[in-house]
Structures are given as structure tokens and as C-alpha cells.
Length: 600
Image 1 (cartoon, rainbow, N blue to C red):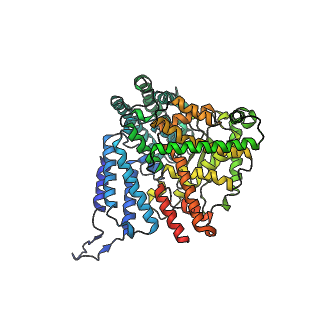
Image 2: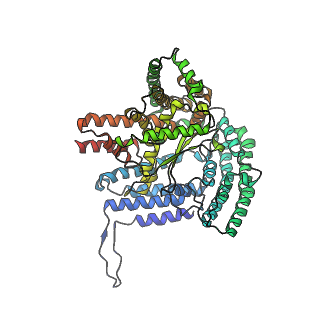
Image 3: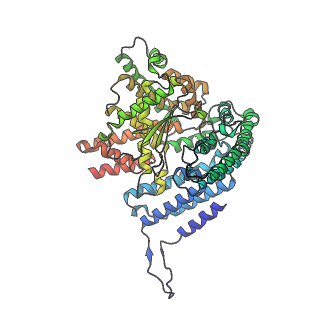
């Protein structure tokens, strides 16, 4: 409850009136200090962000705040949930005391985001997500492995940094035991994972059970001990980390793996969707609302998906005819998915290929953007321990202080899931001008509340990345019809997600039914399809955000083009979308409407 008390103290201070009269040494009232609405809001948002970082210490590390690098956090404890509730409830009450109309336009948008975040967080409390503390796709275990590899946000530059990590590991070990307790509660409540997802989690955990500490990825910090450390310091840290891995980490992870295999697995469910959980239909609709930042009914989303799949499939067939392929679309899919010329022979060749795509895209970006990120990005293969269940590609943001570039991860586990014709669109989406642009520019913003620099909305961020794929057409990146087919293939994936995600979680589709639907409508490798479907099972609603977000950005651009005519400036439109951080879609629409009015 330490954090709860701190939060209440902060809130009590902020809950005072906007003016105060401190006494002078002569016991006379000093001049009244009156805060403007802008000052009140900025102070409120700043205090909330600081309080949130203390409650979410790993989030603080990724945000570049080092104060809590030794703390794992109280996630899954009753105290954590109570403190989170109190934090959000009190700050929502305080925020509503500020007159939005008195804020400047940019801060009105920020204020709307702030209120939206708190309302959404409080609404989510009605569902027992604590009973599902990890999946094969997202978990504290995966995060800790990445941090402990010495190649992520956790710093390993000083002796204190090394001590901090050991303390964080202590908290993580406690978390592994608490996670089992919460999952036992979930078993009793009928809230459990699908069996197939647990079958993916177990080998992820078993992969960390090394015989000697030197074989563990958690030993990497020892392999990279700074030269500035003394011989005595290096010796002591080597012994400490060897003991930490052998006596703390490996036993905790073995115990967790045994729990999943022997206790939890027999209690899992055979169904794929949230419809089979208590209050599952409402839970899924709430998750769909959260990820899309809309209130669209899931049935409407399903229908949009069906329409988009049909449209894109027709466009794919035009490419088949353009390249003179002798056979139907299904045969074209099979050709593109199997013939050797469409694939690299080695992981190294694939990574070099993406570096070449990066250079080609970078050459034309200045023609379409006024604002570009200061940070660069690098292309890396997905780490071996998670490559079997990871997505085909992903992006990790750069360090806030510029000390580490962004990372465009490519899964090289199955080279036949990484066709050459898909490389351009994947790079546009995950790197520049997709996620790398949007997230890096957001982190580099100045004179905005901190939560605005580090908060995110999936519909905005994934919608922008899918819009970046569309922009590649205008940029001339898709002159090769096969690369354009790759663009259509990725867009098809996002359209199929609307159908399959809602199908499994709202319409009682089976996992096998979802896999077959994706096989019938795309040239994706089966291994990639399976990983995608199981991802939707693990994080319901998240996959809906891509297409919903892209369609909204395209609609707003079309609206601006129609309203402004010759005055429309594409670079300026991109500035408007990118330079206030990630926004709920309704808030973004408000911003673009205001911009259109000012341009007219």
C-alpha cells in the first residue's frame, strides 16, 4: 500500500483550490497565486504520470525513467488493484473539475485523452483479467527475458544497475508464485486459457531451464560487464548472477512450467473464444471497444471484414492477370507460397534484404513528411527463445534518451513465412514511415504531458502503420506488381482479422475454422496462419484495431481533401496526425476537423 498512500497524498494536494495564501514571516498573507486552467491540467497530468510510473515500474524503465529500475512492481496483488482503482477514480474526479473550454486547443485534445484513459481503465475493472496473467504472446516472463538479455531497456552500465536488476528479479520470482495463485482462482471461476495456448507457453518456459548459468540468456549482462568495473567487482557480480540464475530464476521458472503442465493444462478449455467465459460476450465487446477506441458492435466489425476481404481478393486477382499467371487465384497463392525464387535461403540474407528495403524507402520519405524521427532503427532477427510462437515481425521503440535505436524484429524461424514479395509492405508497416515514425515522433514530443509521449492506442498506432502501407503506393514503392501483391496480402491479413477475431470470440468459431478461413483467402504460410490465429485467441480484440484505424485515417484524409481542395497539403496532414502522440479515433477526428476549419 506504499504507493496508495503516496497517491492519496498527491491527490489531496492537487485537490486544494486553485489559489493558496501561504503566510509570510510576519504572518501576513502572501500575494494570491491563481493557476490557469492550463497550469492546473498540466500539473494534474504530470502528477498522475509520476504516480503511474511508481505503480508500474517496468513501464517506467521503458519510458526512460530510472527511479524504479530495481522494482518489479505489485502486479496481481490486491494492493495493486486497489491502488490502481483509487488512482484512476480520484484523478478522474479532479480532472472533471477543470473547465475544458479554458484550455488551449492542443491541451483540449490532451484533456480528452486523459479523461478517455481513466474512463476506460475504470470500465475494465468489471472483468477478471487477473485470472489470465500470461499468454504465449504477452507475459511478464517474456518481458523479463528481454530485459535480462542486456539488449533492451534495462540498463547495465554501473554496479548499481546490476544490483537493481537482481532486486527486480526477486520481485519477479514472487510474481511467478502469485500468478499460479491467480490462475487457481481462475480455474475455480471458470476463467482459463484455451488448451493450445498453454501448450505453447510450456516450451517457452522450458527453454529457460538451463543446466549451467552460463547457458542462460540472463547471463548476458555478465558477458558484457563494462571495462570500467574493477576485477573485484566483476568477480563479485559474476558469482552473484550465477547464483541468482541457478538458485532463484531457474527454480522459479521450472516451478511455473511444472504448474502449467501438471496442474493448469488439465483444466484448460477446448474452445477458442471469450464467448465461452463467464460474461464473455460483454467482456469481448469491451475489449473490442478498448482496442478500436470505438463503440462499434462486433457484428458490424465482422461485416466490414467480410466486405474488405471480398474487395482485396478481387484486387489480388487483377495482379494475377497482370503478371500473366496461368491458373486461378488459389494456384497463384500456392505458387507464391512455395516456389524457391520467392524466398531467401538464409536468415542472414533475409536481414540484409530488409536493410536494402530500408535504404530505398528512406530515400523518398522527405517528399511526404515535414516531421521525421531523430532516432534511427535497426533490423534484427527475433530471439531464438520466442521465435517459434512470435509473429512474423514486430517493432520495439528506441530508448527515450537516444542511447538505443528502435528495433525492427524479423522472425527468421521459418524462412518460407517471409516471402520476398512481402518485404516492402512489412517494412513500411513496422519501421518507416509506420511504427518507427509514429512511436519515435511521439516520444520526442516536447511541451506535452508525459502520458501523451508514452501512452498508446492500438487503433491509432496500428491504423497509422496500415495507412503507411497504403502511402507506399503514392511513394512509388510498389512499382513491382509482386511487391504490390505483398501489400494486398498484408492488407488482406488485416481484413481477415476482422472476420476471424470476431468469428472466434463472438460467433463461436473454432480454431480450426479460423485457420481454414485464412488459408482460403490468402497465400500466407500455414505456420504463420496458426501463429496469427492463436494470437487472436490470446489477445481478443487487438487485431481489430488495424483495419478500423486505417479506415478512419483514410476517411479523415479524404474529408480534408474534399474540404480543402487545392489547399490540401499532404505533409501538413501527416503533421496533424503524428505530432500530438497517439489519439483515440474520436479525438483524432476532432483534431482534423479543427485543422480543416483553420485551413479554410
